[in-house]
Image 1: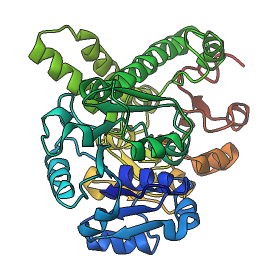
Image 2: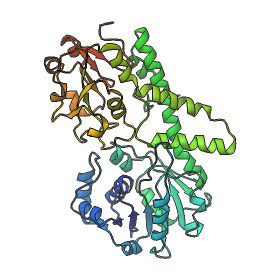
Image 3: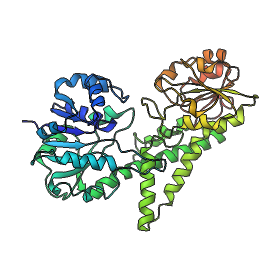
Image 4: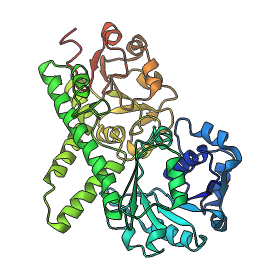
Length: 426
């Protein structure tokens, strides 16, 4: 008989992870103390945007139960504690709510059940909890990505599990749940698992920083990074899935949190982590790439700038550390019009900001347009339509959402990350 699985905390991480487990055929109890949230979830009014999540919850049907009654977790054999952990502007995690939820959950668990902490925590956190006997407490590394969370939850590359004793077999119920996903399972001590998540993100940041550094060089010497990246992905030492697309620095909060954690731990323990400071400097520099392009190319008096996209990436509601928001706040000498398919820009960001109802309306009479978020919708825009609506010719398109040849043919200056200027080489 399959174990019953509980999830405490129905924010992004808990909701997506619980839905993936229910999709494997397990009965899943989804608990949150917020009764309004539970009511919305029961009606499939989801608080997060993730492609495929609504459909997967619907297909799970009665296997996935939403409840605001903590006592319902007593029927579970495995309970994941999985609220999102908030971070401040310095990337420091506030685990207060997580700790409270762990203790309240432990109080209602049946004596044979095991707890798995799924939320990301600072290294050294799990072993100090003291809430359950060591053989009943695990830490599991989450590797979800905003906008791709369902895919990654359903098809994980591997599962990293922190244990009090990695040599000891995993609890049978937990093992049954993990085996259902058909990927390698890597048991290790608590501290190793906690640092493994940070290590993964540091490697991602390193790849992103390399791509950004060399992509900028491409822009200056007439090379094209989109021609170089495929060659790197054919190198086995780098690989086909490497993060090699240039971008506007790191954003969203998770990577920043992990870099701040490494800096803090290195300072406490007297180790060298200067490379992290360099990554952060590079990230801040890359974030302002659109601003530098606009300052260099727009000469109009009291210019009008169209901003397409305000979330930090596509397929999410999140604006945490968004390059688009940073750009809006930096353009105080301009009039702005913005459009995003899921988030309305706030008047608090800029005193002369208007919100358009569609992407082309945000381009009306614009001296320049910046496509700041790679929403799929923006790939459908026709450069000729932009040219007719705009007053100027400058299109800042970091992620190459518009067709290059069509944009140049429309008479627009197409500025793309890692590519030579549109007029430099055809």
